[in-house]
Structure formats: C-alpha cells, structure tokens
Length: 313
Image (tube, rainbow, N blue to C red; front, side):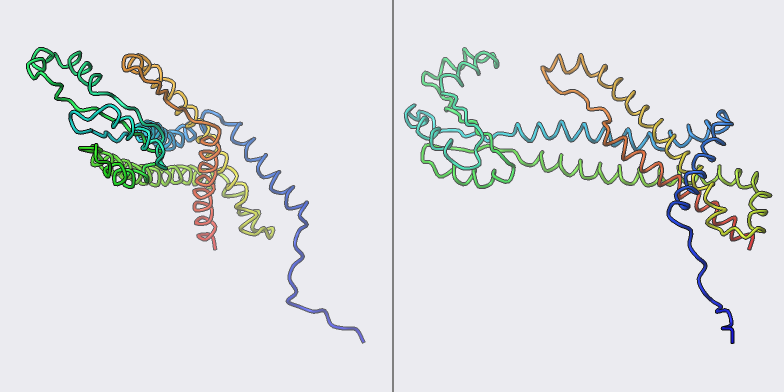
C-alpha cells in the first residue's frame, strides 16, 4: 500500500551558491541600468551627496575643533605664586619637590628677577616699578599636569608648601568650553539624523519612479510565482548604489572643503605661530560615510518597494 504524499512540507531552500549568484546578478544588473542613464541618475546622486555632505562637513569641523581644544587642554598650567621675597633656595626646593609629585608632566620655575624683567619689557611700566625699590613681584612656578583628573589633587598638594602664597587655575572657561562642545556634538547628531532621513526619502522617491516604470515586469514576476523578496531585490540594490555613489561624492566634497579651509587658515596660523593644520576626511571617514549611504539607500528602497508590493495585494 502506497503511502499518501505528505503535505505541508517546507519548500526546499536554494543553496548558498545560488543565493550568492542571484544577489550578484541583481547587483550587477541594477548597476548596469543606472549607468545606462547617467544624466538622469546623476541628479539623484547629487541630491543624496548634498544631503550627506552637510553632516560630513559639520563632523569634520567638530573633529578639527576637538583637535584644537585637546591641545588647549594639554597646555593648561597651574600657576604657583610664591610669597614676595622668598629666597631662591626655597623656591628651588619647592620646584624639585613638585617635580616628584605623581601626575606632573613639567614644572618651570621663573625667578622674581625674570618676572620683573618680562613685566618691564611687555607692560611699559618699568619706570613705575623702579619707584618701589624692592621687587614687588613674586617668583612663579608653572606646573603642567599629565591629565586633567590630576589637577584637583595637585592643587591640594602644592598648596601645602609654606613658601606658596597663591595658586591660579582657571577651570571655569574650560568647563564652559566643554559644555559648548557637548552641545555641538548633539547638534551634529540631530543634523545628521535629519539629513540622513532626507537622503533616504530622496532615494525612496526616486525608486517610486523606477517602480512605476517596472510595474509590468513586477506584475509578470508575481504571476510566475516570484516572492516579494525576489521582486524587491533589484530595487534594493538600486537604492544601495544610489547611497554609495552619493556618499562617495560627499566625501570628495568634504575633502575639497578641508583643502580650501587649510589654504585659508595657513596665513593665520603663521601669524599666530601655531602648528595647527586642519584635518581632512580619512579612510575611516570614507568607510563610515559609505556604510551610512548604503544603509540609507537600502532603507529608502525597501520602504518604497514594500509599500508598492503591499498595495498590489
């Protein structure tokens, strides 16, 4: 007696080699279709590039701002003022003790005579100071901490020396600067999200036109039993190619902007004797931008294709 055929069995899945071949063919066919109409598709690519170049440029500006502020943070110093008239031996003893403290990068001692000479040379009040007789300016010790976290501890330790009169470390402006940088990063994140959404919508709207052009071909595929995933696959790759091309163009635009900014800041940094050089987009930025463009293209295409296929049901 023959066993009746079993029903409800899952359909055999295609092999991995076949799956890879289908995706390869879909990606190459979609790329060939885009290259067949370069002018029409270039407008969409430029629109996506504009939407991505703005957050890329703002991110580039923030990265350069972090570079500048990091150098400022490294250059912060604690000014240690000794009591007027402190003996040179006492200031040198404190200098040597401070250098032994953990967390101190450098400590530079400026004698009272050097302080007076610099003040007379730069203030124009040398004649007035001559009337005081004795030098009223104290010796100064400039201490550079290794890390910002060491500052509070160093202030407490250095302040315990009897020869030390005052400590000066202005932390308020650094806190304000850090708050502004944090606000700027959140602003960049908001701009990136909004413009990324606009790029996805641009790609999705373009795919709607492509879907309208392929309406008969999609209907034929569904009549032959094609699944939604199979009918949607070429459209998804078109969206990915749009996103990749727009991201690549946005990276070149950001690179060009960095070059123009460097040329404009060159004379300014020379006047201020600064070694700051604007940082352009690197390979890591390119890969991140390409990944963002591909994801946005995939998202926009998936939304447009899925909405159309559901409307046909």
